[in-house]
Structure formats: C-alpha cells, structure tokens
Amino acid sequence: MPSGSWLPLENRLDRLKNHLREKAIEWGADLVGFAGVEDFERYPSTHRPPERARTVIVLAIWMEDPVLDLWLHLPAWRAWNKPSRAFEDEILRGVSLRLSLLLEREGYWAEPAPYEPGIYLKEAGVLAGLGVIGKNNLLITKEYGPRVRLRAVNTSVRLKPDPTVHFDYCGKCNRCIEFCPARAFRTEKYSREACLNYCQANLKQVSQYAVLWCMQCSDACPIGEDRRRTKVDNSSTPIRN
Ligand code: SF4
Ligand code: SF4
Image 1 (cartoon, rainbow, N blue to C red):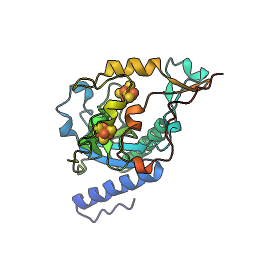
Image 2: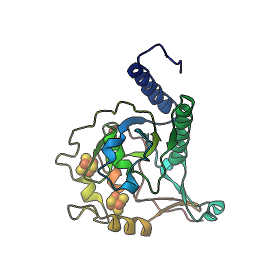
Image 3: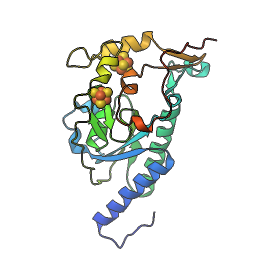
C-alpha cells in the first residue's frame, strides 16, 4: 500500500482500513468487519482481546458448500488428539495470518485471535457490524444468513469501527426452532448441552476420515437462502469404509 504519508492521520487510517478489507476479500474472506476493543469490556477478561489491541478485525467465510465444513480425522492428526475442521478454517487462518503480516509491515502489532481462550466470535461479528444473533443462536448476516464461519485478527492500530446492524431478521420465523432435532431451543435459552449431545451422537460420516456435524438450524434458515447451490442431504445414507 502506498504510504500516503502526506495525508492527515485519519485519512491514512481510513485508507489502511479499506486496504485491509480489500485484501481480506481478495485472499478468501467473504465479509470483513471492524470492532473497537472497548465494546468487549462487557465480557469476562478471558474473552476479551489482549490489552495492546485497539481493533478487532472479524472475518467471515461463506459456507457456500458443506464440504467446506468437513471435520477431518486424518490418522496423522490423531497424534495431536484433535480433529481439525479443514477447509474453511484453513482459508480463514491463512487470511488472518496474511492480514497480520500486512499490519506488521505497516508498523502495527497484529496477530490472529486464538480460539481458546479467545473472544466470542459470534458476538465479535455483531460488534463488527456483520449481523445480529438470530433465534438459532448463530450470527445472521444479511448476505449469507447463518451460513458463515468466523475468525478474527487483533491489532494495535485504532481503526474506525463499522456500524452495528439493528434489524430483526427473524421476525415471526421459527424454522430453526422447529427443525432442530435436539430441541435445543425448547426453552428461551439455547441449550448447548442438548445441541452437542445430539451432534456428537449423529455425526454424518462422509468418508473414513471425514464427518459433518448437524447443520439443520442453519440449513433451515431462509436468510441468504437464495445464494445457496448445495445443501446437506440429511436423508442420505452415510458412506462407510
Ligand atoms: S430460521 Fe428463521 S428464526 Fe431461525 S435464525 Fe433464521 S430467520 Fe431467524
Ligand atoms: S446444530 Fe443441530 S442440534 Fe444443534 S441447535 Fe442446530 S439443529 Fe439443533
């Protein structure tokens, strides 16, 4: 990016913000939002950005195809005792790393936000203006509904936060509540336990090493539905090797 050092600081920071957004999209993100760290003060200290951060950049990738959300259990990865969600996470990890390097080159501290402990990514998405939390307890974006995955970058440069969204996408819709096989939304509060228990007991075996988790609550959502080309077929017979 040309330095534009003759410009007032505010204009330079606006240019940097635009540049970061453009690059993140070019490298594979579908949505990019900026949040100020002050907005995270409402969360426990373990779920706030580090002290030196001033801005959190939130990246979203559109789950255009369920294959992006495959959890791989490759034999070599078992040694780490962790399955890995491959494609979308690898893409977002790459984007967040490249953004961090770009910021470092501009003279600012930056690092991809860790997952655990880390900021609440859905809430960060809300604070960065990407969408709102829907009845399915997921971030609902105007463009893609809940069919996004998220990552974030913490940086020391103070960039203008994006305006938050104030729109009730859900209205009278209750599709996710009705479609949830675990009845995780039976009460006002989403039951993470019911959801997890169902998901773990009903992994969809796509191949010997790959499974898909339940996505019925996001699959059912009409927001962003018109963009979709591929759906999970919940009735198909699992492949077993
Ligand atoms: S399915 Fe309906 S109620 Fe659920 S998140 Fe989407 S719009 Fe909201
Ligand atoms: S992921 Fe499945 S089990 Fe969990 S809340 Fe959504 S529909 Fe229900």
